[in-house]
Image (cartoon, rainbow, N blue to C red; front, side, top):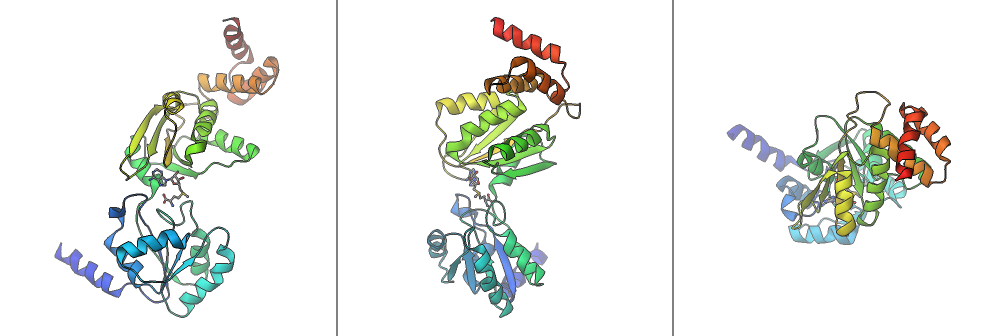
Length: 295
Ligand code: SAM
C-alpha cells in the first residue's frame, strides 16, 4: 500500500509533463466522479481544449482552476488542430475534455489524438466516467465481449443496414440515443431484432433519478409509450443467441414480413424476400401471415 501511495504522489508531482496531451474524463452527471488526478491535471496544464467553453468554464470554476479554455468541437476541429499542436510543440501541456464523459467516445477527440501521435507527442488518458461502459456493467447482459455503436445513422439506407448488422450481432451492443428519438429507435430494434430480444435502458446514469428499464424490447416499448422519455439514455441490447449463422428468430422473420407489407410490398413478394433473407420457408411464412390476416 505504501509503495502505491509513494508512486502515486511522485506521479502527481511530475504531472502534467511538457509536450503531453491529456485526454481527461469528466463526470456524466455526478460531480463527485471527477477524480483527484483529473482535477490536478485540469488545474495545472497550460491550456484546456473543450467542446463548450461556457459549460466547461463552470466545471473549472467549481474546482478552482484558472487554466484558459479553447473551444474544440465538430465544427472547428480541423482549424483548431494546428493551434493545439503548436502548444505541444512549445513544450507546454494540453488537456482535452468534452461536455461530459470521455473525449473520443462519441465526442471530439479522436482526430486530435491521431494528429498528436503522428507527431510523436505523448498522449495520456486520465480515465473517467463513460456512459457506455457504466450502462454495460449494470445491465446484467454479457459483458465479456461487446460492441459499441454510438448513435445510429439517421439516413434511412445506412440506418437499415446498421440495424440489420445489429440484429445479427452475437455480442452485447451499446447504443446512445436522445430522448426524443428513443421510441423510434426501440420500434426499429423491435422490427430488426424481434420484440423478445433482451434489452436494458440506463437512464440518467450517476444522477439523482438514475434508473434501469428492461427486460425485453416489447416491455420497454410499453413502458416508454406511457412514460415519455426524459433525460439521457444509454441502450444495452442483448446479442443474437440464435445458433444458425444467418437465420433469425421466428418472431424476427415475421416482424420483417409484416414491416415489408406495411411499407407496401405485396405479401407474396414480401414472403419470398424474407424467406431468402432468413432461411425460413416461404410457404411457412405465408401461412403465418394468412392466419394473422384471417383473425
Ligand atoms: N463521451 C461521452 C461518454 O463518454 O459517455 C458520451 C457523449 S455522447 C455525445 C452523449 C450521449 O451519451 C447521450 O446522448 C446519452 O446517450 C449518453 N449519456 C451521456 N450521459 C449519460 C447519462 N448520465 N445517462 C445515460 N446516458 C448518458
